[in-house]
Amino acid sequence: MDLDQLAALRTPEGSAALTAAAGLAGGDPLAAASALRAAGVTPTLAAAALTQADLRHRAVGKFGPAAAGMFLTRPGLEQATRRVVADRRAARLHAAGVRTLADLGCGLGADALAAARAGIRVYGVEADPVTAAMAAANAAAAGLADLFTVECGDATAFDVSRVDGVFCDPARRTTGTGRRIFDPRAYSPPWDFVTGLAERVPRTVVKVAPGLDHALIPAGAEAEWVGVDGDLVEAALWCGNLAEVPRRATLYRQQGAEAHRHQLTGSGADEAAVGPPRRYLYDPDPAVVRAHLVAELAVELDATLGDPSIAYLYADRPTRTPYARCLEITDVLPFSLKRLRALLRDRRVGRVEILKRGSALTPEQLRRDLRLAGDEAASLVLTRVAGAPTVLIGRPVD
Image 1 (cartoon, rainbow, N blue to C red):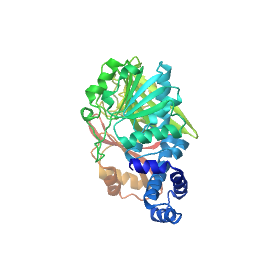
Image 2 (tube, one colour):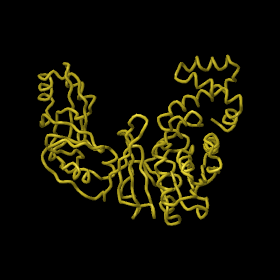
Image 3 (tube, helix red, strand yellow):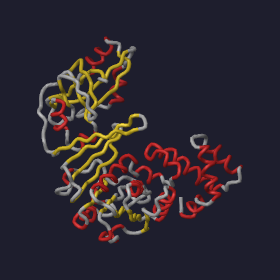
Image 4 (cartoon, one colour):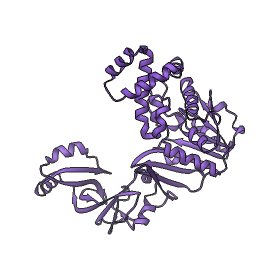
């Protein structure tokens, strides 16, 4: 996608091509391209329209029905915030008194659009010209162009004294290759600039990768990890006046058309008690684990760790919780492939799910080595208990 192609897509002919392409999305790409060309669409416009149709189809899971009118790029879609997360962040900013917001590194505009929907005036800054133009087009398509404007430029040059809040989503992929950047010090804008924003604008939020080292969290900031339906999707640093607790795990569970939000908070420094495995095993959500809130969850569940370095919790009774999956454990064995294979064969287990923490075993290889046969199912947990390789056999608790 380039600026000329984007401009072509926004003409009446481009709009018609996008509508036709939407009806062909998901089918054979060659047949779809032929159908558009047969309808008089130029090859270049047909290719651009079909690409957008495919991306819009993929984006429904993140943006819902609004995806049908958005302009997208593959890297931009991968990095964009899900609407349910962006809307909640915008609501929290608005509740904190933010009325003008700088979105530094606004990308395709997912977070800026959410803030604008909440009534916040947003000034977006994006370094890539095509992405900036797409963000502006998305604002127009959403009817929010009066609340969200975009300039193409250097985020570090924006005058933040113009706003009372800042949201910064630094680029975490290399230009050209699209490879992920794991070291925050290699982000763009630079990490020193990003973490220094809170000193200039007390209400600052920074979106970061979920794998962020806790040692890099600025003093006094609230670090939040966000999960959606069991997937860890992002982390954010709430700085200055926005910080409420040291650590937070926020989970969204989709139930029909609604997404229910659950939040677990704590210091992130507590340690759970350690004890032997018990009847029920809890596998905490990745957001809880990354937020270092397993100890807080252990208190809620009256549970203990089987090993101080492994985030599996054990309890005597099942407790309903949105923060962990529960298994009822029937067997706890020192790991032995021969013994495990014999036990599963005797029980006619032909299907297994394999969970692992603290084990070097590869689930796919273990599944092959077990030579399963039978019509029963079981859950296997590969872990360590008191430092020893252990396998637990159980079944999910509804």
